[in-house]
Length: 450
Image (cartoon, rainbow, N blue to C red; front, side):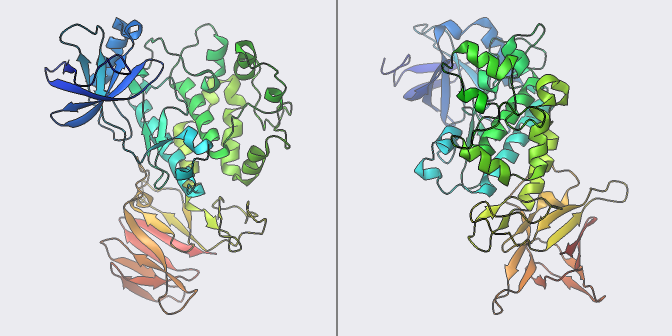
């Protein structure tokens, strides 16, 4: 045995009868140890439970999750149970895919580690959006994660892609399980231990909002002046802060827990830079939602708001920093230099048919802005930022003159404000001008507005 319960070279067997060989140990956590193992289909990760936790209930949970046969690439989902055929190591573990090196944990972002220094406002919003969509998919299958926290989400700082780990504690809604969550992410009714309170999709919504606030604000939503007054952050103090007397930093009706500017400058600055569209959702979920679980913001609301903000990110002409704006909102002052941000024209887009029409959405047409396949769907299940259908490009010989280039495989129809009409073939560009109308096919059309 080397540095763990299992030894390199040891042979285990899956419930299908395949023999796998243990390699090095990746690390350990509260429930067990994780190893690399060699299988016929390539390397996998093995989570091996500590003996006292490898009980019948955990095995039942695993069997249920594996029985889903879910293959969503945003989750390191349990694939098969593994045991020691020789019986030297009682208990069991399970196989899952190995986490690719491009994914980093969120604490590394908050620690400002050098490899994440290039993370931008855009990739943070994309990571938040992907996180919301991942949990929306999980909840759509009737499964509650029950322990959403910043240690279970990994993200790619270049693309904003996310990976959800530690899925072996998820259960189908209504089922019992031992894990109730991590206290600073838990819903107040769970922290208090209310009669009838149990982890589920509604409590997941609180944990998800805490995670989003941490991701975008780099701060916990309930840790303001009240937290700074606590001399000893013991369990009693934590229960009061997160359960018996939780107060949102920016609760409009209760100012007791406002951030202390001298010591909590980051959250003050980031909150002021956040578009009202997102601020309003945080206020809802951390005021009414703290007291009434049914009023917590749903995944679809977060998805729509994050998507709208992502589409309207603008660069400051003075310092080049990315600024979050709103589709119909005024030009903000840059969070970096304080100058007013010049808003580029916007593309107002509608999709669908006469019987199923989307509400208009706006895309700011700054340099290199892009439109994707998901923009052409009435309601996309998942945002895909690899399928580009249009891109703002600069004229090769006339600096400062921009157009929209057709990156799709379909021909568009363009109608100018003067009434002229012409076709835009794939690879061709139409000059940007106010009033320009574009028809993309399939009922998707747009108009350029100031």
